[in-house]
Image (cartoon, rainbow, N blue to C red; front, top):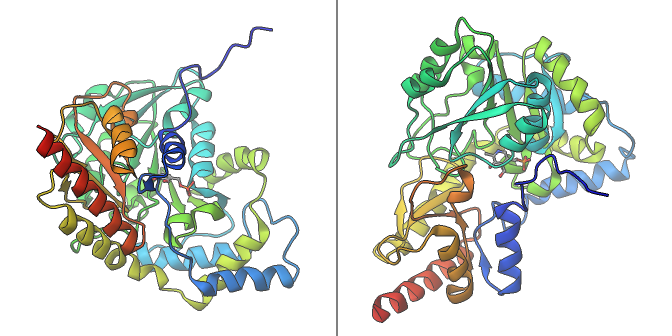
Length: 389
Ligand SMILES: Cc1ncc(COP(=O)(O)O)c(C=O)c1O
């Protein structure tokens, strides 16, 4: 039987490809975004405890009540607004599920969705599965800034959703309060919702503060804001995230969620709730923790030919390799796996039509020894490149 794909051009994600290549070539993997250090042992213990206590059956569809209360408390601390745990918070299978559910809840056949490139890779397929069409607006290098005039130029009667991601993966840029004001002004009199991917909400550097849609009165009223405990608790494999949205939007999101995953692993939710209740401010240390890693890697790479582009946020770091090679990034990244034994992530797969660029994304959520080792291997590779030319 001929099987007609709904997503014929969607292959395996670049993260999976590069991680697989890293294994094949026995390379150090600082590409895919996951920590290589253990989670807080108090979080592991909380999980052991709640399983032993019997928290092992279906969780409520919208999320365990204790966890939703902890989320409300945390949001109030961060964004000075008290949300209703019954009608505004939904626990999801990582941020990925929240993004997918929000898109399915809003986008109808023929609708247009504006997103910014380079873009995290899960947005576009979800829009297409909903029957929508993505309209992409580039973030302008070198700082990957938002160009709101350009956004105004692509708004149409069909625009239903705008997806923003700050701090932004993979550009490591952040949106400021002025960006949120500009966005709010653009959509003020239009039936357009916002999907704000804020999974790196606590990872901003050099004293920057996160501008969340939840702290913006106008945007809060029309936004799905998406968060990830995978990022906040260094536990990407737990796959626990959540979505915050006004009651009417949450209702629609839950209509998708309940037939998608129905509910999220009960012991994981209870463990996170218990951990947050005992260590309510644990996330406050994230920015200095990752900033030290960013600075360590940048110091080790400076002058090597892999020039760090100072990251404003996220747990990634871009490096520019143009001093070493004119190769396209996907080929150069594969060469690095083979010859430097270091796996990175090229930037072009984050674009529909990639511009000419020579940037690679490195993940800094790694032990210092891993970062030191990766930097050493990259420097040695760069030295070999230079002596060969
Ligand atoms: C920008 C962005 N959004 C969403 C996700 C997915 O988060 P989760 O692992 O919680 O599904 C990631 C993960 O890397 C990400 O970088």
